[in-house]
Every structure is written in structure tokens, then in C-alpha cells.
Image (cartoon, rainbow, N blue to C red):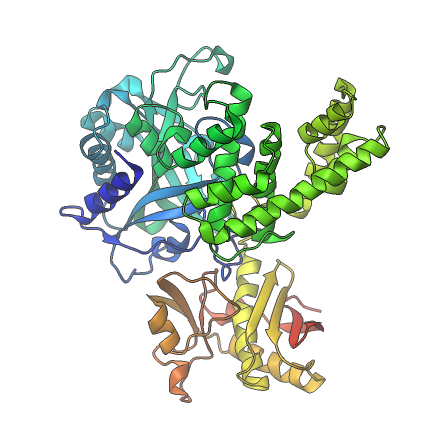
Length: 597
């Protein structure tokens, strides 16, 4: 069964009676309008307001397949099961069906639709905490379905609790989550004793592969640090297409499925190595295949390699793939990268990715010249100057007749750990599944950017359009088009308009609409944004009117956006513009805060 057939079977299974789900359009991989995320990392991200109780225009039962990118496991890529980019099969119940229907439908899809052997299924459920009950309900449902006691495992919050932040303790105020039940496929491979004497689904020995996870989202973190039950009980299912395809193929290596075959075939032809014949070469094959597939997906959304945000991730993926090409002694890395992109249907971005590989090759050459001049230079110096990993430095030194010692390696590892700790401090969360800060303060200031945008257009004119933004818990930064800096009088007028809207405590609401309907109704959308077929339109003020009417009853602001917002403007607090600067031809930048002087 091909991956495409699995996709079609999944959507059709949940659309037909008695399940009757409505298919929703997947979100773009890159949501520039959402400051809480670098990438879409799960199908539930755009559904959070609906999981909290807001009615969805398509009803209470939804299904889709969401392209996703997660970077928390990037160092694990190279084994049989981890990837950074994947497609997530997802279905949701927004306060409709719950555990009994969800688990029985999962079972039916996997065993009947895909024909997987029921004897090869193991499941896990939540063991509970002092505050959250043990999920005996799910365990009993699995038993009725046909899973015996010995194939049902209880785990704690590290394995069987899901929220965007992790454990219940780490959840910020307002975040939602709940216990989950994971489904594992048993490939029957021998247990590796280095993982312990007892083999179980989460022992990571390679025998078991998680192919689906039903999250029962029923809690929200409150101001007092406790979890309260949501008004509705939700289901959020996610299953990685690549892993499911591996289970259908009856082998535990996701890189052997049809999705990766074109890439592996090219690598075998270019290198002369047979995939699976040698461990190190096979690991390099996997990293190249995953990273270039992910890079193509990012680049197709208009992102260019750079040193910031999504562009940095793209550059990191391409260069890490190029390092592995060096390990395989591939001479023409640029040509290989372009061939791979073309083979997986990404011809349009193959040139951009090839150019980045070419730039990195030049950096490799510079590193080699530097070492040739001074053989006493440290490998970590090469990393700091050119971003060259230890293994690449090792090859450069070896080519010049010097073998690095164990002391050199330990020196690199010590300095690298210091560097990593500093990076974690300055950019905490940036690469954890693509998620950044979504705290209450950021949410307030993100809403303030909408107010500021609208006020600037009212004071300066409708030529003003957003060109970018950056938000921390302390301040907002907002870039916009305008030929000259604002006068003191104009700054005061903008502040007064924003704070008048704050004092009125206007409602902040949103609707999901087609992109055409949203733009026809006058919703703002700027700076080359990437939108899906369906968008969220946030309105500040009376949602029954729209800017297109030009009436006195029009809302204060109406804008397409995917980020988090307060429910009423009174929550934002008094806004002050604290600085402005010119950052380009016709582009201004202002900084504002809601903190008292």
C-alpha cells in the first residue's frame, strides 16, 4: 500500500458515516502571522480556540493531514524512526465524541482499513498523579476492543501527558492539555539489552514504533497554577504518515517507505554504497534524505536561507545535509542536492538549496586553508568561525596529515557545551518543535500590534502597511511603511487612539473564513504573508460591521492573523511608544510597551 493510498483511506474513513467528519484545509508550514511559532508542528495548533469552546464553522468533527516540522529531535535523526519533517494524520472531536469512539475508530482504521495485525498492537495510558486521576477508562476500553492486560502499559507525565509545553507543571496559564493513549506497533525485532533488561513500548530499543496518539484535551491551567476541567472534553489524534507507512510495509525503518525511495536511490547511485549495508553510511543517507526533504518543504513557502528564524533553520538543515555529503565523499554536492529536490517534486526551489550548498562548500574550503596555514588551530575555533562540526574538522586535519587526539575531541565537546548553554539561554524554545513564547504578556502585546497598526493607518493614512513585527514579554517592535518619521504630535495621536480602544474594553473576536471572503470584507493582510485557503480573521470592536463599509460603526481593527489574542482590549494595558527609527527606504520601526514608566 502506498503512502498516497494511506492518505486517501484515512480522510475517507473519517468522512463517511457514522463518523461524519468534515475535512479542513491544512495550515501552511510557515505561519508568519503567528508570533508564537516558527513552524506548524501539529494539526491542533490553529484549533486551540475551538478546543477551548469556540464553535468551529465546520462543526464538531474535523479531519485533515497537516505537514509539520519538529526540531526537538533533530539530533536523533539518523536512526530508523526520527524525522524533522512529517505529515500528521489528524482527527478532532470538539466536545462531541470522546474516548470510547476515538479508540475504537483508531483500532478499526489500523486493523480493518490498513490490514495491520491486531496481535502486533501495544498501547499505553496515563498512570495519573496526585492531582490527575489514573486513566483506567481508556485501559478498560482497550480491553473491550481486544488488547489483553499484558499489552497495556501505564506511564507518567513524561510519556502519556500532552500539552504544548510538556508536563502539567510546565504549562503556562491558559494552556490546554490532557492525558493521552499511544498506539505502538510491535516489529518483533530482538530487544537490545543496553536499554535495560525489560522490554516495553517506551524503552526505545527499536522493537516498538509509536504510530498514533489520542490526546484527551480536557484541562486548562488557571491563574492559581492548578488545572481545571474545560467546559467541553476534546479528542486530538495525531499519527505520523511515515511511521504508519512503515508499519504497513512490515519493517521498522521509515526511510525504506516509498516517500524516501527516490532520495535513497539517488544516494546509492552517487556513492556506490548500498543502503543498510554499513551503519555510518546509512546514518548519513537518512540525515541527508530527511533534512533535504524538510528544506524543500520550507523553501517552497518562500523562505530563503539566512541567519534568522525560519531562514536559520533552513540553512541549518541544508548545511547539516552537506556535512553528511562530505562524509560520503560526494564530489558534486550542489548537483546532488538539486537532483534530490527535483526527484521529490521541488524543482522550483532546487536552485536556492543548491546555492546554499555551494556557499557552504566555499566555507569548507576556507576552513581547510586556515588549517593549512596553522595546524595548531583548535576544531572549536573552526566551529565558531565557520560553523564546522567536529567530524568535518577531523576530516580537514586528516587530509593535511594530522590526526586529532582524544584531548582535542574533549576540548571541543567542553567548549561546545558552553556554547550550547549560552544559545539555550538567549533563544530558549526557538527550536523546540518550532514553538516560541506564548505567555500572557506576549499575547497582550500581540493584540497591541493590531491596535497600533489600525491607529497608524487612521493617523498617517491607508498607505501604512505592516512589514514585520517582533514581540517579547517586555515590548513590541512593529515595522511599517511610511516615508518619514512620526512627529511628536503624530505619536501622541497614535497612542491616544490605541489607549482609547483599550479603555473601551472592546471585544476581540475571530472567525474562520475563506481568504477571498476575508479580503473582500476589508481584512488587512500584508508583507507577503503565506495563507492557506482558510484564514482566521480577528476583529477588534463590533464584529457585525466591516471596514469595507466605511461606516462609523466599523470595527477598530480587522486583520488576518494566526497568533494569540486577548478576549477584550482592556486586558492589554496602557500602551506607550518608547522609540522609533528608520530601518530602510520608506520603512519605519517603532517600539512600544504596556509596562508603566
